[in-house]
Figure (cartoon, rainbow, N blue to C red):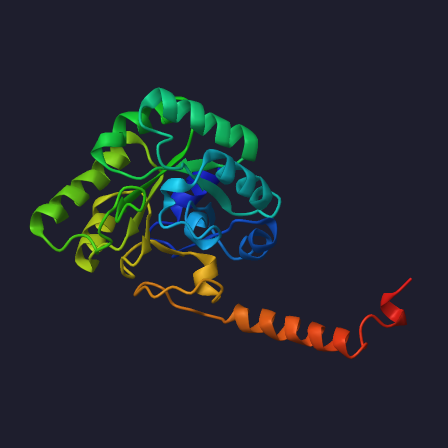
Length: 256
């Protein structure tokens, strides 16, 4: 049984843990606890202060993923395909191959429903593992409001989830999807759902690690801050500054 098969088997057995990583050092920590490490295009806003993920390039994703790969040994490593890199099957296959060959990741993640099913089938035919993404789609959204409030929207997202499963995705991220819809989707498909602002009904959860540890200041309902790493960094830098000013560092111990 390969990693993807083991991942799918977790559905209805144990909650799946997923977090983002953009560097080796963070990846090395979260890999010990996660089932899936995601190199998300969220790095655009988290690391580069972009207004959206649309400015994230293939080169950015590949370089960060190469670093992450050095820290991942246990969990699945999935990489987001950036905006405008999978507009058709030919482009998607070329770019997915480039990402995988350069980063040695286990698969790629694409945003969208029915309109990308043909692309997913092409990738699967070429033995490329694909993770889906429904609900809020950061690469194409203008209004970041939760999805599934209206009946028609609920039906469409549920149908998209079933189509993605049929096309061959091994899992689907549900971002900011209304709770009852997330529950219906999770019950209706045989592959795991991973929620972010989509309730505990999902098979697992994902967060941006920088949000979770307090390095990225974000006011979003779906984020829970578990630590304040910014404070620890600030305290360490302050102590370093004070030691240097008072000539307490470096001592002979730290000199040649």
